[in-house]
Length: 392
Ligand code: NAD
Ligand code: MG
Image (cartoon, rainbow, N blue to C red; front, top):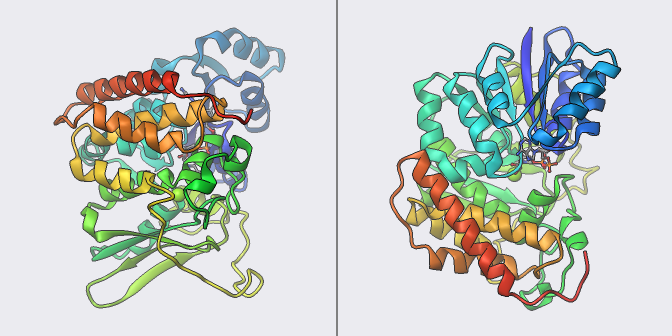
């Protein structure tokens, strides 16, 4: 029986993971569920999946979680805080960890899973952007198997299954809700418009990242670490149908791609079952029913400068990707709260990278210090920006 810890269980990836796990009750079960602060949603998941442990990251939620579990007569043990979560991830309560916490907050538990040699289903791309070299080194040293869950990286993982090295990787991007718009036309877009993704149903932070193309920038850095490919061997193509999830070129002239409907349960089933294929609940792709077209175009770096900022941060190395990621998290949060305009997101990231020149960083402490400095610098800048005219 595969025992799975689902971190970020109440989120978009977490609930998709639980949907796949529930289809395979004979071979796997959710043994640990963890969420940020939504105790009611976590309790509902405990009812449905009856895990051994439930963790709420926010200690203020502990009493409500413990009392709710008791009142429901569930055997699930309640825990609170990051340290309790990391200990459960590293201990024998699970063999597999679905790392689906959003943002840099997911790094400690992701690292704990890698250092404990678990099968790590990695959706939390920010941990790779912040500390990719460290995370990959620790995973290798402790025998952890990383299966990327990001659809593009999961596609590449599948294309690389025979062990041959890639000559070049092409990450596909839907282009987000504002594909085809000029930079000027983006000045007044609202959070509601930005999170309305045309193809994927996702949490608010990654939806805004998809609208700015920062998501693709983070994914370029993610691919660089996961597959040990240099920046000049990674390309991005906009593919509005979101059916080709990525492509890999090999030295013999072959290009392999993975296709499927845009539903994260496929990637999660690959991670949970690998190397076996298991049912995910996602139907087969019918290309004619999907419109019979596969279109590709180059990304517009003028309207969506975040992609170029991410390539530049990756090339700079050291603390630069950590600064990029932290400034972006702060800017996206301010945008979602209606405090800054959409175009202030790339401007805040660029200004923060300018303010904090790259420093070499080979320890976790140095990277976390850079993350903290970048958040302070970004927040300071955000307070100087005029409030946008829309209200969230
Ligand atoms: P979401 O906002 O829907 O869910 C986030 C989850 O993280 C929630 O369960 C929340 O309670 C939990 N959380 C937040 N802060 C926490 C903390 N400090 N400690 C513990 N739990 C915390 O986000 P999502 O869309 O599911 O994305 C999760 C991660 O997966 C992100 O890193 C995202 O980039 C990545 N990802 C998501 C998708 C997708 O389709 N949604 C695709 C690829 C990659
Ligand atoms: Mg993706």
